[in-house]
Length: 103
Image (cartoon, rainbow, N blue to C red; front, side, top):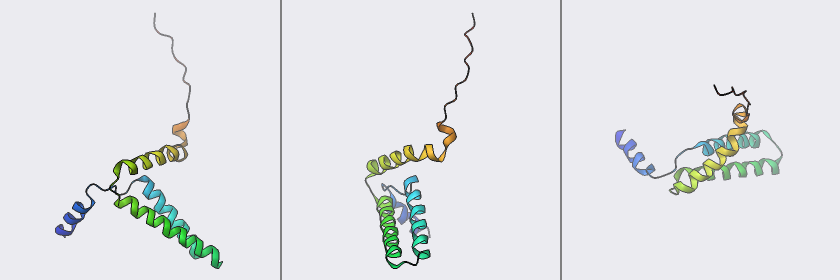
């Protein structure tokens, strides 16, 4: 077991791995996949299945990518878009009364 784990660590060294954007894409892929199995209209179901497979392919490309700078930039861009929507309380600015400086 340790040999397999060590081999996997060596293989993944210098690769992107899983980040927040990958998790979001996996969840989106699962939702689209479930929708494609629920919807019984032939053309729509096939289109959703195709979109699901494309999303999974993108996730796998991002996980095994060695272009870390580009993947990190994509993830940072996603997080700047996603964080205000996921945490609306963080984006509110409250004005606090400032006390006058002591004399």
